[in-house]
Length: 381
Ligand code: PMP
Image (cartoon, rainbow, N blue to C red):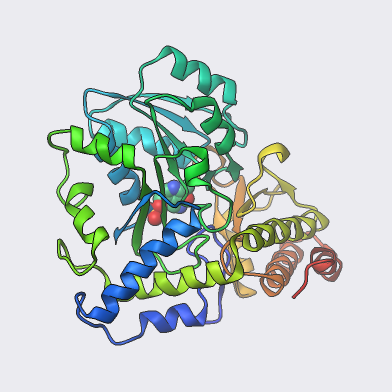
C-alpha cells in the first residue's frame, strides 16, 4: 500500500496529520477523566457543526448506515409509515432499511441527477400519514444536493419527524438543525469531517427522543438511543466501550472544522467544487448532475465514448490519485470525484492533472497544464 496516494473518492477523504496523530495516541481507559472530558467536548462540537443549541448528540462506533438504522428503528414503529425522499442509491437505502424492519414505506424517487420537487413532498405528506420523512442531503451516487431547507419549510408545523442523512454533507455544507426544525441529522466521520471511518454520529431533537420513549420496545439493543442517552449526557457512564481513539480523532477533526469557521468552510467547499469543475470541463469532461442541484462535496463525471471505467481509473491511480466508480444505473458510464473535508488548491491541482494525464494516456489528448491553471485561477493555495 502506498502512503502518498491522494484519495479523492467521496469518502473516505484525505485525513490531516493531526487527526492521524490523535488516533495514534496511547489508548486510555474510556473512563479516564481526560478522555471523558474530550468526549464531552466532541459531543458539543458535533452540535455546533449542525448549528444546534437544543439537539442531543450521539456518537457511537459504527458507520453512516448504523446511524441511519438508529434513526429509523428508534423513531418509527413497525406499524407506522415512513416517507423516503430519494435522490439516488443512498436515498433508496432508507427504504431498504424500512423494509428490513417491517416499516411501511413510500418511496419518492427523483430521476438520477435531479431533485424530488418540494411540491411533490409537500403533497405526499398532506395526503399520507407519515411518522417521519427521511431525506438525504447529498446523495453520493448522483452528486445531487437536496433542497433540505425548502423541504423542511414545506413540512414544518406537523408531527412528522424530519430525518436527514448528512453523510456526504455535514461539516461541508450548511445544516441548520434548530432553525430548519430537523429531528435527526446523522453522519459518519469519513466525509466532510475529514476523519477516518469508524463513528456513527447523530444529533436528535427533543421531540424525537420523546417519540422514542413512547415506543415500548424497539428492535434494537446496541442501536437503542435510550441505552446511549445516559452516556451522551455524561460520558463517564458505561453502556458499551466507546472507540477511545476514534473519539480523539473526531475531537481533532471537529476542532479543525470549527477553527476554520463554519461559514468559511462551507464557502471553501463551494470554491473548491467550482475550481474542480473548471478543470474537468477544460479537460472536455461533462458533468452528470443537473446544474441546478450539484452538491459542493463531490462531482459525478460522464465518461467520454470508449473510455472504460476500471482501466481508466487504474491509469489515474498510476498518477497518484484515486477516484471512484459510479453506482447503480450509471455504473461504468460515469465516475465520481470527492472534494470535501480538508482539501484545497494542492488537491485540486493534483486531481485535475492526474485525470488529464490519464485521458492523454487512453488516447484523448488534452491540455493538462491549461486545465490545471484554469482550475486554480482564483483559488488561493
Ligand atoms: N449516506 C450517504 C449519503 C453516503 O454517502 C453513505 C456512504 N457513502 C452512506 C449513507 C452510508 O455510510 P457508511 O458507508 O458510512 O455506512
